[in-house]
Image 1 (cartoon, rainbow over the protein chains, first blue to last red):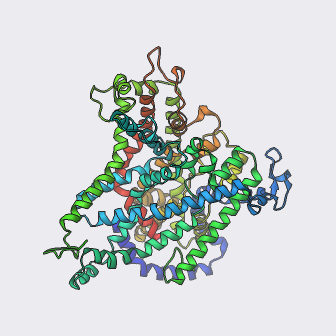
Image 2: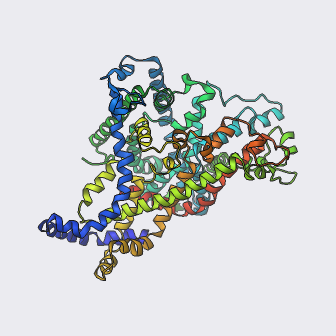
Image 3: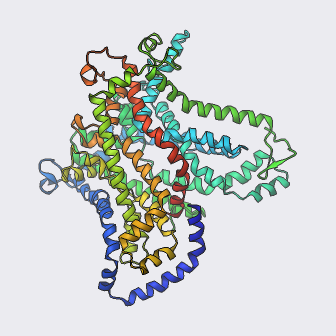
Length: 330
Length: 302
């Protein structure tokens, strides 16, 4: 892979020339002759594009039911239009909806403060290890939970922390009181957070480690000559080096801030009830698919997507204001 | 926390002091321990003999009385779990194959710069990364296509990941143009270019993307929950949810046991958990070898 990278980089200037040359020639050809020449390429693209169009673009149209009194047996064609009635739940502040918003925002806040910095800390420690072998062993271990499904993660947590789980068995066997975590409303947020930490902290270190390995060694050497110790180097060289990737990830996270732990919560909602666990995504699922309030659920989903898109775009703009690259330029 | 001036430097940083080394060692040991401990507990309990599990109150960290495969035998010799295992296997195998064909052909087509419609199509793929169609609209589409209660509902909608298309395309774009041009001059058709030049030169990235699709299909849970009401079509993850997470008991008729005693539920649960973990563990070393590179080149170039 590395070889190909270098190869493409070396060739790039030539490529650009060739490309523009090709393009000016292209303009002279007629559309038909280009089609005749390129149709095998299009044929190869079509199957994949069809799936993308059918399951990524075509569903967008389904959002019309947010403006309908949708009845599944009538379908979208025959269901009656209801204007913005479905949105009244949002604008009139329906308590269940507000609860879902509140839980979503609290969980997002917790995840930004606790879950987001965790891999940075682990990456800094890993990066500072002197032994490559040790680093690889630790990486192999901590990446693993990322490849487990949420069902497995939740099941494993139950077996470890549940009422008759490993830890409580040990506690009981040694004369201590068992701890009540699984199914405990008070501990639910802590449980969700620890599950996310367990599953994805290791995996999230990858990006940070990649960036850390690219920080110029000369910066460390120069700062050491100026008398900086390891802590000051971390503060003045390492962290500034990580700043662009941190900002990029925070922007992406902002776009996802209304999306937290959907599968994770669906799996555990029964045990703690809706009050403590309902987030926007589960609200859509419970009310729409399970509850049959299709229009309302679609309306909430639509507003959620619109807000998320607006958040990404504005966060990106703000990042540009501060002179950062952001996700894309434009 | 004063940094001591050290005699030698490493990578431009002074050597770490003793305190720092100890703190790091403890930290990493704890982190790794937290990851590994649950897995060991699950493996041990699934393999420990029934009496030992009961005596220990349901959990065994290290089986000391020999190994007992009854729990595995009971779930693998027919019944609910066996069927779910077969379904998961089918979904994973067919899904991965389909996804690889669709992703690689699309990625190849998009890598042929200068062909008609190349830029608009690339844009179409890129834009789809920016939004999510939403739960209800996706459900309506699957319903409209008549895929509810069909395994294809779990397979087809996720068979083209725009991200993977971009990763594969980036790799194809990096292939030496000379080889492709030479083959074209020799009269190779587009399909031959893709099949006999593009793919063989890109084995590594195809393998990584395939492994990612495979793990995704094996782990897919919510789409199955959403689209499959018929419990006889449930994949392993849904069985895992019902019998392990929700704790529904598996009776004799759900297991393939002929008149044998049913092993303790904990052992059965652990065994189900293990057979859903083990396939991922088996492919993990292969992913581990390639993924960091694959993920990164995709992210950087995409």
